[in-house]
Amino acid sequence: ARLVESGGGLVQAGGSLRLSCAASGFSLDRYVVGWYRQVSGKERERVSCISSKGDHTYYVDSVKGRFTISRDNAQNTVYLQMNNLKPEDTAVYYCAADLWYRDNYCPSSGDYWGQGTLVTVSS
Image (cartoon, rainbow, N blue to C red; front, side, top):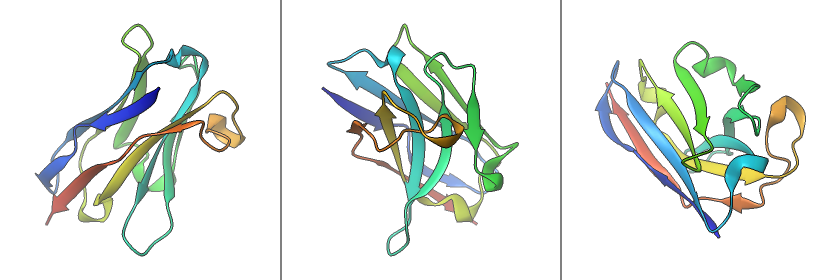
């Protein structure tokens, strides 16, 4: 059982990317899912989270109005649509899933973590 992220890449500032977090070997529909990002040498940052049914979402202030998290439980996948990307969004993006959530419907610790996908935004 694992999570696999995809959709990262190189994009110019102002551009868009859609990240996918696909679960294999287990059903994602009972799990809260979060997107996190990390820049080398810095702490991991929580970016966005979504409840198991998709009726509650959370965004860090720096991405509000630009990023949208969604899920398709039939496809066992959670998405992060990223618009109007900025150079400061450059990072490795990870998804995590947990049966338990803490504040803002974000994973408590992460029963499952993906391997990460690199997003690079050029100025």
